[in-house]
Amino acid sequence: MVRKKLYFLFNPTSGKGQIKSHLLEIVDIFVKAGYEVTIYPTQAQGDALRLIPEVADEYDLIVCSGGDGTLDEVVTGMIRCDSLTPVGYIPAGSTNDFAQSLHIPSNMVKAADVAVNGRPFPCDVGAFNDDTFIYVAAFGLFTDVSYQTNQRLKNIFGHAAYVMEGAKRLYDIPSYYMEVEVNGETIRDEFIYGMISNSVSVGGVKNLAGKTVELDDGLFEVTLIKMPQNPLQLNEIMTNLVMPRNCDTPYIYTCKTDHIEIHSEDCVPWTLDGEFGGEHKDVRINNRCRRITFMV
Image (cartoon, rainbow, N blue to C red; front, top):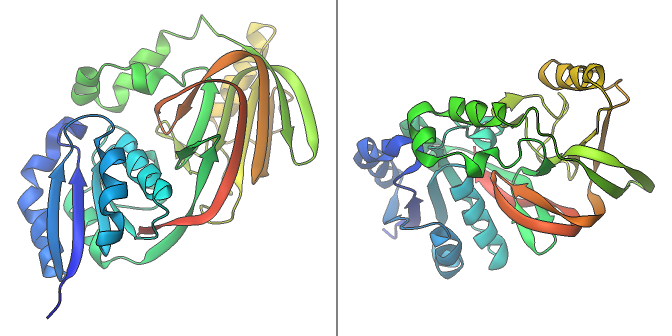
């Protein structure tokens, strides 16, 4: 009998290194599902991005384990080599926003079972200039928290580490004057935050982009927050973000789109899936509808 081939790539440091205590059980699930398994523990940031284009089309299934950053590297690698091989995901990070959106279990052994015995789900991904993101591209308030939060703090405190780091920023809010072209409309304003997302959870907060998110509809959810002029406006903005909102505040602009362009006079730091995405004056974002197939 010819066995199917599975490439299993994992980040051994994600989520307090919990993969180490489940590794044998996970591999056993893969083998029992009929796969010949190749295992690779990543050695450094960028490792998955380098490896995936070399191996993707040689295997019937790619399974990765780690945080959102590891998954981002895998998907970016798949895009770069134009591979259509399905991807299984075993979440092991501090927040795991995208896994929540796909209803992938947080239990690693259960997630491993989904990776080989689940159903294929063609999912949208984003093109950000020449780069790729899976579920969120963002700028402004708190967006650098995830990649500037100390890894040791992440391992000890998990999601609370992001909150601790973010709390330091409340009284030092940067703003950016931008021209935004979306759905035939041009918006010019000063913004403290912008998010183009395809996820029901961002930064561990559910429904931040609303309650009508579909991961395979070819559309992103856009959220742009204007610069508040006084503490009352800031309070209204924060209330609308943390509570289920009806988007009737004049300080938050929301819409759905498959394409958006954002221009600014100054270089703006961006975050892609929780990792630093560079500084840009001109950004073009397109939705790649149902481009990557995940096992869910």
